[in-house]
Length: 609
Image 1 (cartoon, rainbow, N blue to C red):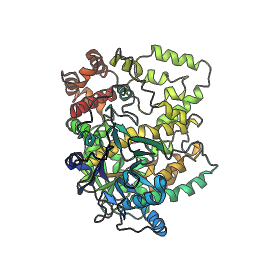
Image 2: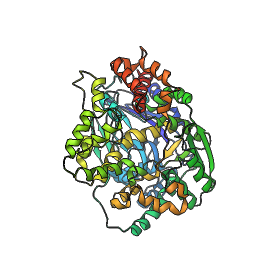
Image 3: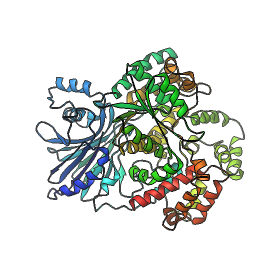
Image 4: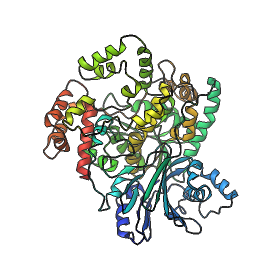
């Protein structure tokens, strides 16, 4: 796991300045404290910060092939590198290191742009081909690793984090106000856009080619749709068990200590259970909790005791949450209206004091149908077949008071495309009040529409899973997972997002994912013998933060002072009366997600503008 950055001038006589590469690299040293190298070859420059995980002695980058006609910088892990190495040796390639970085270089020589189809893992990399004078870049299938870029008529620049790109004087920090409604609606900005007007994200499962001053991107993989297999439950379990074992085993490849983020819920507990079955002993586990009823430490302790793990805990207080917000905003690069980012930052700090690699249960809900919202939408689909439902939904939208009643009632009679969102921060009418008269701003649904179009012929559950894996997962959940862990030089791995596991899950019938009131049915069945009943039968857990209570109590004055101060971004962007109305409304209904979204936006502006 590392930090990469690079710069290509289209004018071959324009040399890359080493001092500029140093600046781009230095600002993200937290991503790789173990080694710092760079390469300047006329109009091309690469920089690399290394967090040493595999082949500690021989994996330095930028790395060249044997005849030094191709060079690579790579961030991530290739889990099938041992298997792929054997395949490439049989094809005549010779290796100088034991690193997975060299695997990608030789795969590039052997397969060209199709090399990405050989890779199993999480990755973002760039290769400069000196023979063909082209730059080739790729991002993993789900978007676990980040890749930002900028281009104009003179240059192409890329980096693991936006702050590296901002070291280039010619790159503007201008806000993209067209993306602001999208942030207010979803809590994040969907790829390829960011809230920086001129900085883009390479979409997951895409490759990018730069030749002269032309840039092309293309998709090389997609989440399979409508690939259902007529498997019985027993057949599914027989295929699932060895696949999950293999996936977790591959994610344990490391030359440094590793552990698990344990929430006490089914997903992270399943990772611990499989590791125990594979013979891993004294597993280090890490949990975060709060002095509130929302704390999930008790569930984590049950699993830790059951599997005799080396368990560590940390408690996040309201004052610590407040103090961490500026640091979290700086590390995120983009505002993400997701309060658990702060908890993950704090938990990563704890884990990094013990280990260098951590596994997480991220992705199981999207892949195996775990969210309660999935079950609600399936029930709603049945209700929508009844007469007069559309009329009833219109009544809720017009007359119900703001809050969950209006939000849920308004979904009646609506198509999935207009009713389902994994993450909804502000209702559309509130966005209109926050941005009055801004008729030229983009519709916050525009970025989601092409995703729905790609899956419109699929079943309801498949469409919800597809949309979440294509938007919320890479642009919110995985973004915060990468930044909050790498802020402390900690590599985070997500076995449930292994693409072969994802492809297996898409072949499962709905009844093997959701049965009755339970989601992730097949996963529950598989790990039942290895976990306490309280874990396999309990509700979904994560790292919930008691912001509702904090914003009403201990942090109420802080929130008001922060958002209503004269130097606040909220006072520059939104009518003061609307922000006051939101703070007042939180007294009688939960507006904590909306308040945190404004806090995150304010801290982001303070950090980068």
